[in-house]
Picture 1 (cartoon, rainbow, N blue to C red):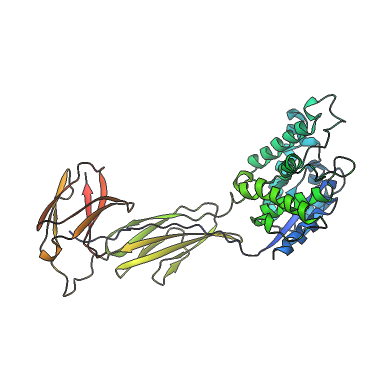
Picture 2 (picture 1 turned 120 degrees about the vertical axis):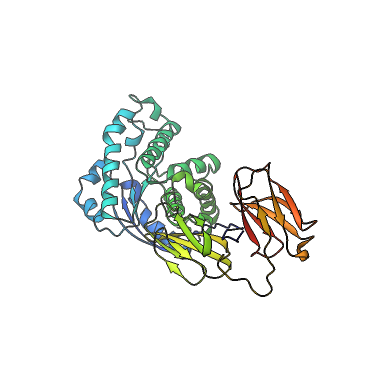
Length: 421
């Protein structure tokens, strides 16, 4: 029975590239975005942590997504095709209206704008800017739609509809309304509203900017050092709220869900030939490093190792500027390698395939007392023992049918394939 190539240890790591970065962001919204200049505040926040936001915006007062869909300025800015993120903010009341109104007046234009964004910007992601309920509800629409008569009622509907848009169009949410809700409940002395009880105060815009920072850079907003003129206590409490509601729950808001994710498996064969199967998601290019100085950009490469040993294989999966990696350590035994002068005659193992047991005939008395270990094909230790004589019987009846690897002694080149029926 000849040794075969097999892995005995498995290590997979996913690397998030969180170094300082430069992001290009387009904001399409209305006065909720331009009051206190949210894009500029976000850029100042990013600068304080060593990051950069290059931004542009089109935010006419009272504008809707339908308005942006027919606005030549908005369409022209989208068409520049250079954005990492495009932020869509609906008019402050519309998403809280009855579902039939939202179905006809909001969702179709969110979908159309998202489609244009994806068409013009191959690497861009859409971010839906979840706004907040008015301080005392929507008085102008309360009579015919009672759910918006209170802050809580209006806010919960906005939350629901923005999440629905993101879910439907594979987009991200910046949950500013959720951060506001947390602050309103936990820090009652922080005034988020301006005097009209609708638009944001400076603190309200700062809360929005902290939310966007966490979403865009995937970083902890409590590390921000820019306070936008707020006192340190209030600024730090707002950052804490953004961390709790956004950064600590990025997956909930789909942040990173559409990034490249590296993953792979492999199938071993004789003579060191390994077939790699790429199981990555959301990636459009790949680089493999086989651990022996060779590399490949083929999606599913086949690589042949010529020397026994442990090799760390690394796959880099790329999508635009986002990269992810997966790493596995594999053990290679090249069956065609000739024995050295110090090699003893290898043991005989029979029967193969086996049913309930196998016999191991040793030809080297030095192995008596040595340990043997049986591993599953996934590298899990399933059985162990030691040699008492030169002929050992190993009971397999408790094992599931499949491929197993027998390791004799301490050397990683004493590996033998066992097949249980």
